[in-house]
Image (cartoon, rainbow, N blue to C red; front, side, top):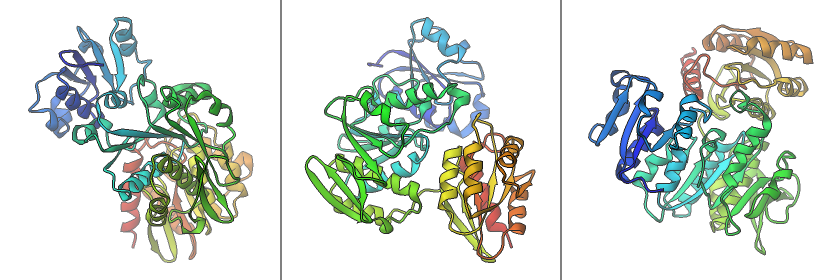
Length: 453
């Protein structure tokens, strides 16, 4: 798509919208920016745009700003079913998201990672691997760093490691990763997508433009992915922590192995991988597949797996006080993610659960907590507290406490936990009922924990 002299409306002046407007200006477009907030309310967020030839339509609805535009760029937070988006499509306006725009205009190579859980850890690990291999790597997308922002600075020899959400794929058209990985699929975001079938279809759109020259990576241990593998046109690599695979990454006698195009390479011992838990072994195997498919040597992958410390807000150790370890897993925003955190606990644990309702079923989590010898107490907060409590009690987990705020929950856990315990924040819910995002929730948790005397 050529954007020079096109009239392009960018809706939403958060980080991705501001970056998209900058990238479009560089491409020669006539850029109009829109947000419900006024210029005064947006404040410093608009500073990167101040010196650019931009038409401002702030403090009004997107529908009011649509007149005469040829292209509409929307943020991931706006569903493609929004009335003004449908209005634009009916008028023949080309509608795309910021990720798709950046994919069209960015230089360099790109790999993509999607899945319900593990995306942020896997793309962060991949960024480390590529940098250790001597590449300039930009870790972008759903992780919070806009692809468009990185595209403004990138060179042809750079590589983009893109965390891809189902929201972003709603408006994907030409999006085309050289290597794409699907880590897992479990119930999530049904308040947006409606059904698992739609949610799964959005995940699979990442592979739509791949050819036989490209590589698709799938989790062989996730039965939900098996029927999807035949849908891709690319070469397939699998990863498994439970069995050997013909092409991909697996574990043999405690060693991570890579097998691809007639080569078989040992990488490192499972116990050498620095990030803990079976779910992180899966993330490491997926990253190893993507990196090896991109010609990164096995010794570089080995070094990276041994040294990568993990990401903020994902089973992140905060501090130890009176023999109790406090762990921030604010990125546990759905049931499956929190199940993985529960499985990682190796000490008696008081867990903080609850938040914004994404219409998920908490039954699998309740059963995992009941089966776990480590989860001893649960403290519930937020909009889903009633729903979680009723599910826990129905499944037989009764060590339940309620708190009005996150601070109250931490204080409650501190009173419950003894020397040798963990206190784990892993809400199994989004944060929007009480916080702006999971990062804010995690930061506040860490601040409150570090203030404990």
